[in-house]
Amino acid sequence: MKQSSSITGFHAHVYFDETTIGQARSLCEQAARQFGVQMGRVHEKNVGPHPRWSCQLAASPEQFARLLPWLALNHEGLIVFAHPETGDALADHRDHGIWLGAGLALDLSIFS
Image (cartoon, rainbow, N blue to C red; front, side):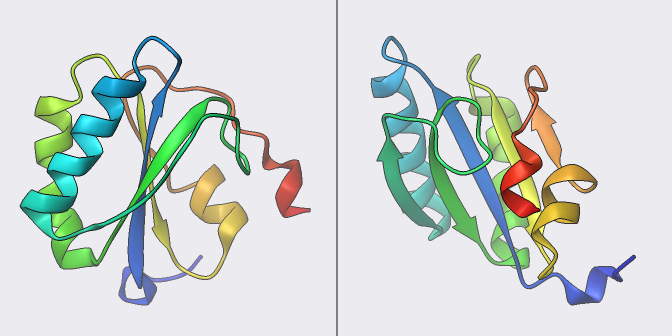
């Protein structure tokens, strides 16, 4: 298992559907403005291992230390999946994930 010192960054994936896309976009835009994190595309399809439409927030470890508590208090019913970036994508998603809201099954077959 990799040591925490090998974490180069974090991703937070905000999940949404056709009824919550505006809420998710607003949350991600606010996070990008407030914390200086990089906001990815707002995907209106499942991408990678993610079981729902999503938008990614990419953060440094320092940014993530401030972002995660804010997301915990402001995700307002949206599911958020966060994980470290260590260079081991399978372990990052399977073993090191953090869920805000309900946990969902990821499609880990893409890492095989």
